[in-house]
Image (cartoon, rainbow, N blue to C red; front, top):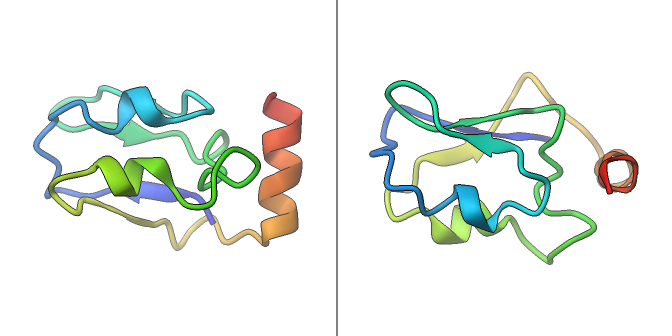
Length: 80
């Protein structure tokens, strides 16, 4: 499942630099996560780095992009 950033985002820039897939970009007024690049850090780390970095708890699972861990690994492999 890809992640998404919700309205609690304060655009602090903590999440963007930690994303191994460059899936996070500045939006207006908050950051956005490209669900086609987000692997929840499967393949790169043990847990989503953006969630760990976010001081606002503004990153949650995206219910529109439900994927298995195998799907996320395949997406990571294709991106990298």
